[in-house]
Image 1 (tube, one colour):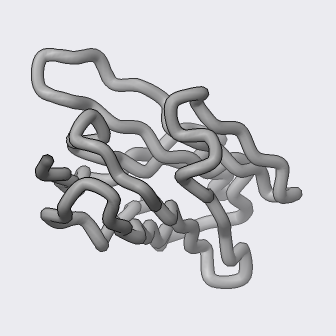
Image 2 (cartoon, helix red, strand yellow; image 1 turned 30 degrees about the vertical axis):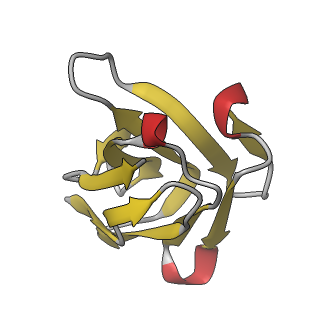
Length: 119
């Protein structure tokens, strides 16, 4: 079994910064792609950013130039540095990862962490 644990959410004023962290623990053979998604009230969950085990990154257009995804593969951790935050960034942020264990490759999700940006 694999668990993803997030930390780092909170309340921040517009223009401020937050850093989210996600740690994967369990019977992990390898992690292939790590990502961050978010879901605002009444909205569908959307992709924010992904990073592969090789370091290739992808961002949704609305966060390009403001957010940065990074990872520490040795620690099975990845991060989302969020700068110049806007009220429209307010959402529950979820980390996820495609993980190989002894028996299967599947996608795992964290429990979510609230990010609130006040205007």
